[in-house]
Image 1 (spheres, rainbow, N blue to C red):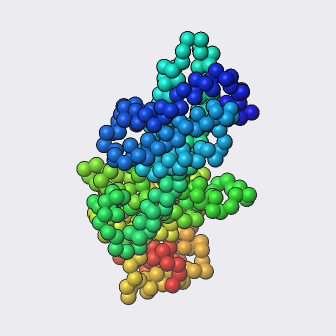
Image 2: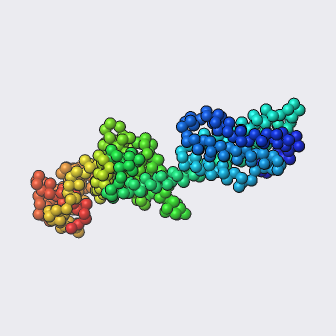
Length: 414
């Protein structure tokens, strides 16, 4: 049953009461927009043409629609609410709060009821009740249509704004010039904390879920966690297995975009929400133009941590300073990485060397990790020295072997 249908048909007395008030529509609309709406915060600073032309026209339309429904003894049709829906979309675009928009409709209906009540004569109480019943019953249709249109438009605006911000983030990370005004709009004029992140394959996977849907859900979840963590709007660019995030420096307090501002638990939080392991690297950009450089640094730190087999977590340049330096190509890089080529067919020797270096040449700790006798470790390390021609127990040999192993992990065998 349509809203308001239970109040129909109206009695002749109710229609007569409404007919006596219909001529007051223009005056009532002016009074509503000039006086009743004045209680809204900021109403006095709205443009005059909006208040006394656009809003007044909408109020007049609503009043006349009510009297038309009474006269024709029917409920409203969907197309008759189109003006209300168009105005709701406009108010959403202008940033009006939904509660204020809905109050304009309720206040207008209350003002109409007061007019009907003032015109009612003794003996017309039942007629007034009929009109009040119809007025209240039809409110649900109008309020529902207005709220739905507002929320649809607001959702579309939010999607559009976020896509614009993602486009801005991509441009900054790529090093393209960006107008200062756009940086200020995004809060990035004072730089940003740049985060690069990798996400492992989800621990649970729904084969029915299209990849685009899964990516969209992951993007929303990552954005939500980052914005709760940093208590500000964050620009996120996500791909299938990771992405970047820009946290405006001005939202991070006096110390600004220091990498140390990233909580150690952030990767774990992201991992829980993504249902997968997450690696995260942070770098600071002191201003907008240097976001691209910070992005490259964070991306390289992230690559190094993954190549070195580091555990999921939060990493900074300080955590991989040696590896970062060694990963820069120069004339010595290839020969250094090639030092361990003689061990390519002896994985047990390579594993022993790795463990021995990790335990700072502690033969017993190495033996415990590998499940060997310490003498076996000694024998294997002696064989390593013979094959690569370096005494790894000497300080220089230890440094060369560590460097060669690091380069091998980063680049693969020469």
